[in-house]
Image (cartoon, rainbow, N blue to C red):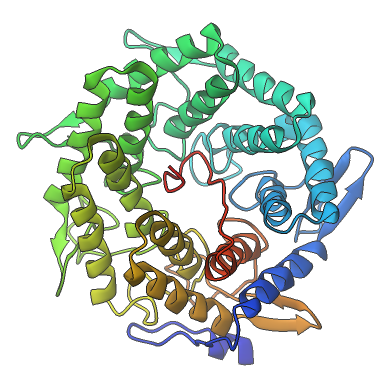
Length: 448
């Protein structure tokens, strides 16, 4: 019961914090997260997977499953150069090459089509395998990414506008599928992949909702729920980010214009705070606004669109938008204080780990000490909230579901648990040691 009490939620409640005596404590915590994950490693003839559940059919997804754990070991290897981590990367990736189709299970998640999308599906597996191919140059990982692309080609639906899969614009779903195809195209410049991308983006763009003020809304929940999630994983922030990548591919201004229009839409629904503004978690319901603050539906994710637009246009107004979002975030009391959309969950998706990753990356890009200080403050929450399980093993009890803050678990996944928290702490360590080198995922612009 002590864990439950210590990690409780209440609006205005302070997270536990710990200020380290040396930056090596960030690395120590990241390695303690690895030891926690390693307890759940399963050896098979096809390689290894990780599962906290007692099952021989693991979740393979990037979000909560084996793909995310493989990715964490890849980042550990790239940061520290230890061969044991590369060995785990290869064995985990080998398992994915043989079993990626096992994860195409409709209905396994609450989101229709998730198993064919990016974060919960085969697109994320393909994206991570491409990063592993970039590191190892082992052709089998590229071959599996090609097989995943062929699956998408063979299972696409089509209408008068082009091809689609789930018919959702969400980066979580079809938007993420297109991101994966873009990354694959960068690897090998295949005409077939290019044609798939262009057909899919034509269908995608046709689904945008134009507003009288020039804004462009993408509602990844359209036809499914009666509200919209406007931020990165399901809304206009993620859609605009994707459209900037399409603009770079094609040099067609319509895509950059559409990305700019997504930013206009986000600004039109933003709500002023004591200082700055925030984009609400959802729109279309008669309710007091809820503000998530991290990667999935908050400033840590939504800022990616504004940063991409700054890099493409050199217009400082987009940097000002990021500053205003961070002002809004701080107005809630974050990163030390809980609020309605920043509950007892410190994971990469929804919590302080996502803030550490964002602030560390933006500090490296901007060299503005404000973001360094914010990264350290959020990192101190991660250190304060960790629990020692055994010598050199730590975990992070958290409530993954916002509306169930009393349900405490300690996941091992990348977006929901220890792998992502460890990754954030590793980035903070490298930044503080002036050793920062981090090849970011394809949905993250801050290494440009």
